[in-house]
Image 1 (cartoon, rainbow, N blue to C red):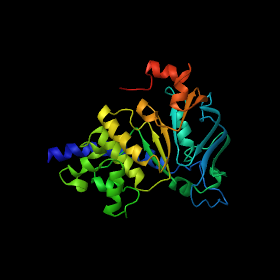
Image 2 (image 1 turned 60 degrees about the horizontal axis):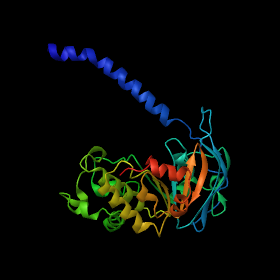
Image 3 (image 1 turned 90 degrees about the horizontal axis):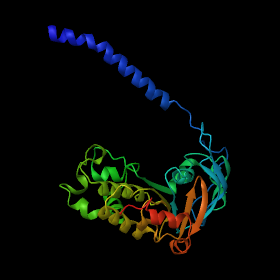
Length: 292
């Protein structure tokens, strides 16, 4: 009886620790979001023409400096926009404003001429798929990870999304194919395989706008090649906003915007930018955003 009795002494400490953790969790859950639906939302059925940043500026709360200043960008439907720049230049902030993770401080972002603040958040984000650098996967099957957020998807659509993400070859070589458990955070898969699963998850919703936030930055050359091949498959059908880390990602971009200290300092195609001395050419030469 002595051993159980000794353990009882630690029960209260465990309970108090659990209560403190639960309090922090519920405090976060109870926070009311600043981003809300408009009272009279505009009904935008589909994305047809372009995304336009009109003199957009943004500053985070408790920050002394703006992250973006007077951004004017137009992204035609079906085109690929690449954003390049050093760390902290404002590239991820640019991408986060499109799905309204934050609201602009000044200016407007329009989709087909409609201010995104006038569109229901759920509808706005239904146009978009996002693949970030840090992929979050669950201790579940490959198929359930791909259709996460859309659990009623049949296996045929899951296979189509996997094929579009250039994932079928490695999935079919797994012990149980799409029914293979991949472990917590996908520990049983390589980095490149994780990113292709994340890309398939984004594509299964058939988004018209695909946002890639340095999705290939931490991958080896072979894995990055597989991701790039997948992007080449879909680039003609989707509007891509790519935060670029590697040269191969931006070579075929229709537009490249170089961001420095929150401002667009250069814009154009790869061929036009590389011809004159500027931020872009300097970055190429110094290899500050290219990883071989």
